Image 1: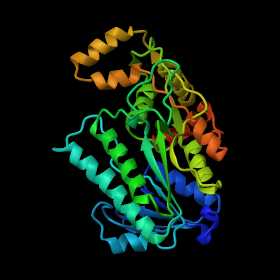
Image 2: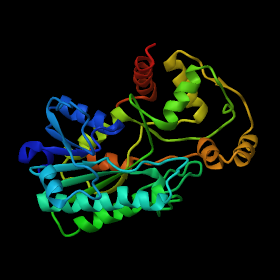
Image 3: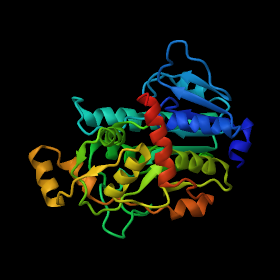
Image 4: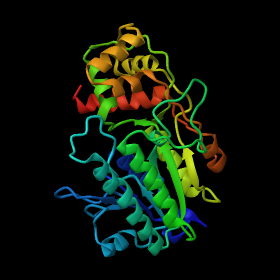
Length: 331
């Protein structure tokens, strides 16, 4: 297989207008790799990006087969980033059904379309949460560890992985699953952005006594990892983890983020048991467990399969994130 060297090297990216999708399309364009971005809806007056194009598909779980086939026509690779992301406080009436439709049904339908289109590689962005919420000290998750999803989001991502493998079995499409930890970088949203806001405002954060290790992933490292997966021969398959070169503790992360923002993080040394008690009383137990627990991944299988190693350090990634944050806030 020739991957992106074949069939004019067209890479189809779902979720192309999302945080990771924007970064990936920009990276592909800068690398002179042709891409086509699939989005649920085009904004009014949208213009195609240099080296690529955006195609409006609507909901991937319900879009007609002929529209999916047209969207994938001529593609050598599909990178599937679209899906329903993890929500801490989900107000949906039936979260399980919402995650199933967006992550399982949509992935299965896209995989069937990829088979019909003769796509060679299918890269699926999954999550470390498929393996669980925490790791013991020195026991990073490995691809062959048994899955242990604990919420509807993680269960839907695991089922999507299995659907992809089943659809691609006995076909020419090579499926690759990348289980990702927290991804950060310019354009980040959610809890990471909220933490940057709190640091910049000088708010005291009661996290100074946490002693954990967590894997993170700068979006610049992620897009280079995806490119490596598109170029290498033979094409990698199966499940792999991707992460930055070193894991960090939460206080180390906040301190480094404060330095990048030029607003030193104000960390209060509150004992972890008190944090957990407060989380229990305030109904934020899961959030506190994520902040205080360790969650590390072993990326050695992906490095062995592709030769990829993360080029960008935490400090570099945070510096670029902080620069974007300042522009966002007109500072």
